[in-house]
Image (cartoon, rainbow, N blue to C red; front, top):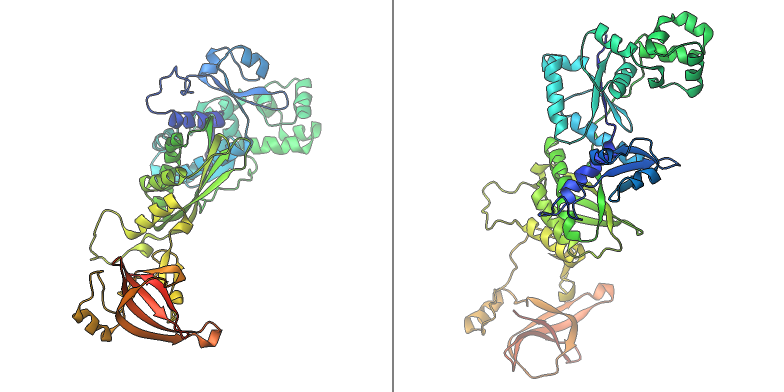
Length: 500
């Protein structure tokens, strides 16, 4: 017989909000402060009549109960925090928990939005016995701070019912598990209301009463759906289960317990997501090169930010620095209610390795510097420069992705900005001087200059209707600036660049 373990998370959305409150509360805030939501009672309401579905200990101490209406709950506490039930968020969270448990156990089935089913029989050979397996499981789950109930069973449905209504039952003894199952009321079964009413009318009150009637007699008095359900509950027929597969991508969503207008307070919630991302990447031996950060604003469209790092890393602290720089340039349209984080691009760490014997000239690599500049100034403000196969100066270079082209020394005589000596002018036969800066547009030369070097004739481009015929000179004006000037065929003089 196959042994199953069911984990039931009765307040998964509320627990996630409480964890968000712990990382939202600024350092130094006291439990009585308005900024600290940890001490305020909190409830989750849902349905058409806004009934209480989940509540924390502070709400329970205030007299609020499950199933109570919103008006009655609000009357019992003036500081009550109310959040609408979000089933989609619970489904995302249960998948995140499954991803976390996948590190220590293999066969996991999702019973969204609040349950996970674990196949225990195949894991006992690895963990020696059931107690060792459960200790490892509890230690792993407790790091996530979710409240849960658990129970074993020899059928998935039996384990689920015992976890939801018994709370904590772990045993491999079939008699112990069956005895606990027989004591459950019929209302605990996942049966339609009509079927439960028919069973109640014939005198059935507990599961023991239902199991006392043979399946053949049960089929004569009731429909086949009830027989199939009882057969699955008793483990007589297989229960269809689809096992969870580990997700290849990292994507997380974190709702905030209270709205944030100061972007500096997003630092701690964001760090929590980045730490989860770091664990995800390290387990897969991957580095992230591009993140997508989404800020969900009240009464406004979500703000989507793209943050890149050409070198790639899995470290949460480095990504947090880039995120802080990116957020410093952002203006919100409304308070932030939730944040999302997704790894848009990943790579293998060995793809980014440089020469083993390369000298480290500082604590920041070139790619790290580019990432910081792009996060602060924007991606379009930071560009690389590459050489092009064109002799026309204005087309000899073009913008490219930073660090995509390896740097090579420029041909020609180096020029330091000092007055040209006879030796430098004599060495011009070996190459040509080029200015550090070209003007955005060629300007007419309107003041007197002194020519020191030249001419260098450039005559090209006749094939694409942008031909040039110029004689370039190195000249110095009366202010001492070294200029790159040229004369065209009409003997007109222009300034094209400035030496640095």
